[in-house]
Amino acid sequence: MTTTESKPRPRLPEWLRITLPKSDSFARTRGLLDELKLHTVCESAQCPNHWECWEKGTATFMIAGDRCTRACGFCAVSTSKPLPLEADEPLRVAEATRRMKLKHVVITAVARDDLKDGGADHFRQTVEQVRALNPGIAIEVLVPDFNESDASIDSVLEANPHIFNHNLETVRRLTPSVRHRATYDRSLSVLAKVKAKRGNTIYTKSGVMLGLGETEEELLQALRDLRTAGCDILTLGQYLQPSLKHLPVIEFVTPAKFAEYKVRAEEMGFIHVSSGPMVRSSYHADEFTLPALR
Ligand code: SF4
Image (cartoon, rainbow, N blue to C red):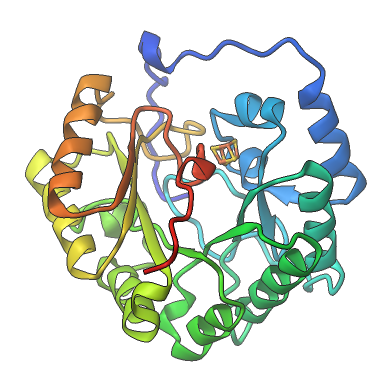
């Protein structure tokens, strides 16, 4: 976390208020994740869709621990010295995927800059275990930038995920304040490298948060930059401030504006665009059904 902002958080507009579900499906998801001792980004990042997704019986697994080595100004995941990797975690993720009967799984991780490969081999093992226990499943990885390491990217690609997701998060001008340990160009480079290595045998995906103070032109330039990097799938969602220590929300972007950006992005050539205030990288990720890979 990098900001000293201490103004009270603004009241949420109506379109961002959620209704809590009433069934016990949420508790079942919670119980399964607890039993298998798994972390999720849903919980660690305080995702506003936590209730909805867990109620539906889906979640995004966060591997390699729950302690991140970076401290991005927007993110609620805790930053501290990470613990050693757990060798049986890939199998536990695979087992949870099986029991949850997921048709599309999203696997993410904290940034592990303390590890030589950034945790890439742990991703590879997890994807392989998930596939072994869940034949036919669509597998999406949402990875950190691995400091742009070819060896790490190759390691993840070795497991043949269907979708390689890496978030740009924000526009070029705001990147130093939003992700001070990352760079805009490095993220674009990671996506471009995956396309250069695998072409149209894999889908690449990225996401941008809105409401951090970006201008419309800056956002559209970021989308053009993503397309230049060969990015296929896009998510656009509203940034929400997890705590007063995090970056403030500068603007609540209206649903109508999100709809307009979806059209603009599709015109640029993205093959699938999710754009809306509540959209997150993995929100309704299974709505993108894999056509035969091109
Ligand atoms: S949108 Fe993704 S991170 Fe958020 S609760 Fe749903 S599955 Fe979890």
